[in-house]
Amino acid sequence: MGETKYIFVTGGVASSLGKGIISSSIGKLLQARGYKVTIQKFDPYINIDPGTLNPYEHGECYVTVDGHEADLDLGHYERFLSIQTTKSNNITTGRIYKSVIDKERRGDFLGKTIQVIPHITDEIKRNVKLLGSKYKFDFVITEIGGTVGDIESLPYLESIRQLKWELGQNALCVHLTYVPFLAAAKELKTKPTQHSVKELQSLGVQPDVLVLRTEHDLNANLRKKVALFCNVAEKAVVQSIDASTIYEVPLLMQEQGLDETILEKMGLPVGERPALGPWKEFLNRRANATEEVTIALVGKYVELQDAYKSILESLSQAATYNDRKLKIEYVQSEDLTPENVVQCLGHADGVVICPGFGSRGVEGKFIAARYTRENNIPTFGICLGMQCMAIEFARNVLGLEDAHSVEMNEKTKNNVIDLMEEQKAVTDMGGTMRLGAYECVLRAGSKASEAYGQEHIQERHRHRYEFNNAYRDAFENAGMKCVGVNPESDLVEIVEIPELKWYIGTQFHPEYSSTVLNPHPLFLSFIKAAIQPK
Ligand code: GLN
Image (cartoon, rainbow, N blue to C red; front, side):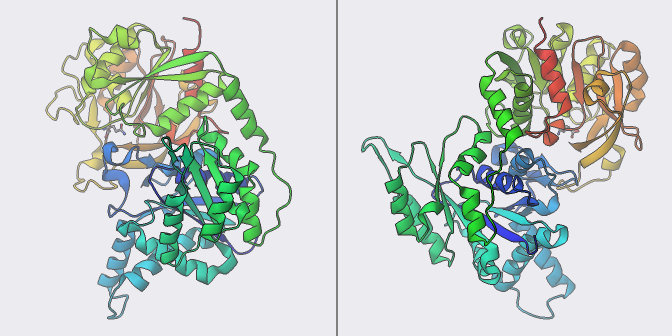
């Protein structure tokens, strides 16, 4: 296409309006027109990455193929666009400052005073443009975390101001705001949007497109009013009304011509509206599925909506492709006891034992793993979940009562889950786990290899502990098979009990690579097993 076009997505009025979904939807619509698109997220916090943040602070930590611990919005980008993101797709203020300070220490600035403008803003701009110049994308969409008006966002908004000036028609700003409905007055209120746009304008940034998040339909007059007050064309005021699924949002944006408005503003030919056939087919299947599949999620963060985001999305995609409606039941692993396990899990069609760190709630995961193993309920253990399956098996089948992970009990004699060799010298906690995509070879004839339909796979990891190979033979002989192994390190990546309907644990995180149009084979096969008559 020639020069890369840059779209910035900012947010105002409130957080959690769905900038990630709007960015992904714009990306989807442009991609459907044949453009090469990527999306990046800039987070205005000081942490280098979200890897050291706990889920109460930040929801799920997403992992890219190149081993970057990233913001969960990157999960949306990948699920919508079926692309793979990298370290360059998620930048934080911490990383920007670190890079500038490192340069300063090296003497790169030749004695100059280092300031927010131009040094920090130059580094932000360099990172905005990096994907465009390095990988020749047609569109780079940059989502700015936080809300306009935050102190932390200022250098990012200043960078957008400068880039809009430098790049002219090749840069555009989409601002997402909220239009509240005052029940007492029975009125939708645009004032917060007007103020938010004013705030943006006061920083020198004129938004080109406004997306108004709303729970009620916004009529033409209201949009006209917003356009008039905010210096935006009427056509460029688009509503984003609550949808039954986030995957409907691209279609809702397309109906209002959001992609066309963007193309026109950027001086590109508009052409025909893409049909989005497979996407619509997915949505139709989802809408038409009436029968439910009940999956219990056993974890310690079950009260947090975003802690298991990618697992939930993967399950819901797999349910759709099995023509089922997903019903999730959250089971707090801390509260699970041998007495209440039947009541909590007995009726579930399938159980997921979730990833995690530390001791809290881990005993409940053992109880779940034992109950589903003994009652032949399809079970999917992911990362810590897989480790719990192995520990439970060691304790109750191999008779190793004190079997544990060294993570929870450093002194255990039966360390069936042990600290990886390469982790022993690690002292820093940030970015030092076994991270990113690694190869895995599957055993022919296993359920896992049947699901994948291939022998060599690549999956993403995020862990420090690992199945202890000293116990491999004992496990194999007793019926828990190590059916996925890393060919270089010989680390066990998948265990399964072939005798059971579906009892598989993965050391890796398959949930990071399930997308709307390419649902993950293990999730598909898990749901397929879960819906078999009991
Ligand atoms: N805490 C475990 C480990 O570090 C599992 C990690 C996870 O579930 N992501 O190995």
